[in-house]
Amino acid sequence: MSEGKPGRLKYVLLGGAVALAATVFLTIGPPQLLAKSETPEFCASCHIHESHYEAWFHQGAHRREACVACHLPNQNPAAHYTWKSIDGMKDLFLFHSGQVPDDIRITEHGRKVVQANCVRCHESTVDMIDQERNCTDCHRRLVHKRSGAIETY
Image 1: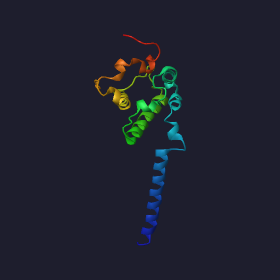
Image 2: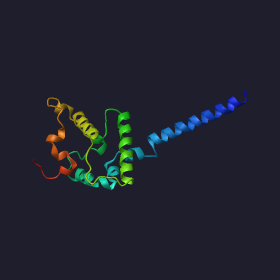
Image 3: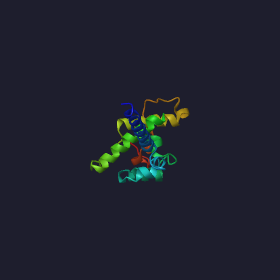
Image 4: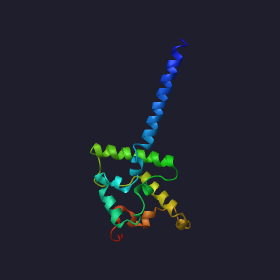
């Protein structure tokens, strides 16, 4: 029986090393994949986001910011990458299952994330205003579809 334990330990250690390597690979990905997937060009590579990218690229007020700066939680890396994975898998599923809506709308969670990022980036500016109101209620031109001529209601 004592001969089986060193052999089993070897397989457990080998399995642990493989699991660790797989976790690191999936977390970091192939070289430059993680960095590339943070770019607006990556987001626009899916045709459902092309119009949003064009509006941002040509007339967006935040052209110097990547999509993930506004659309993913940025309070800590764990939340950022967790939601990046969730949103990415959702987009991938919708695209490949043919269930992409013609009119893409931000979800309630997405709206909260965008609002939190507006406040985070413009903290000193919005310090004295009502932060419960959505920034895009007043700043309609920041919404991708409305980034052209000034829209009034």
